[in-house]
Length: 276
Image (cartoon, rainbow, N blue to C red; front, side, top):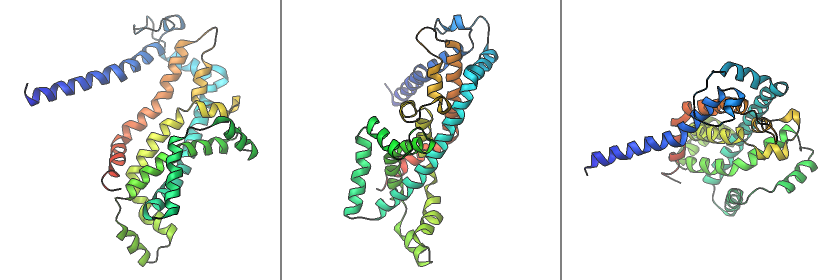
């Protein structure tokens, strides 16, 4: 078998796997979002007898006293605030641990790696948040999301900073730049590829988070998107058509974000692999 045929077969298998893994489930959600309650309960891939896309959209939005709109607001606010704090902290920490060597840096790296390996503990975290009067508050859930995503972001920044020559730091310091001005005026603008990677990957995780808002940010006014989706199901009756419509609406923002930033994601993930 020639090389060109093997390459063609490999690409064909890749496309087929993509269709099976991603597009068929997405088609399943779209089709059932257009059905009435009875047809959607069958949970099949058949086309609806009557397209109710607009009707299901309106009903999903107004259901539960506009719960889905409130959930969109809470999830987007939590995601944006978490990303701002995480990018600022992780970029500075990644820069410091890459540029400096010693026992202090080794200790920092130990805690960063421990943050990746040690699973979070729910009850002690609730105790800490409650002692700080941050339980069931927006700053509390933001700090939780930042803490869980910070180690991975810091490692990416550390790897990317390693590709930036140290001579650039020295030249800026000779020109009179202080530490903060050096970082924010010289280094941080060069971190755009890895920052885009961290924003997209972390935003999807925070935006779709179910467990942390459930434990650390309870309350009807604090409902997030994943908790709102859960409210469309119950023990006795599940409105499958509204559930699939809500899933479709929730899926659109991350999908758009990934489409526009896919090149930056790849560049940010691979840039730090050349020089550590």
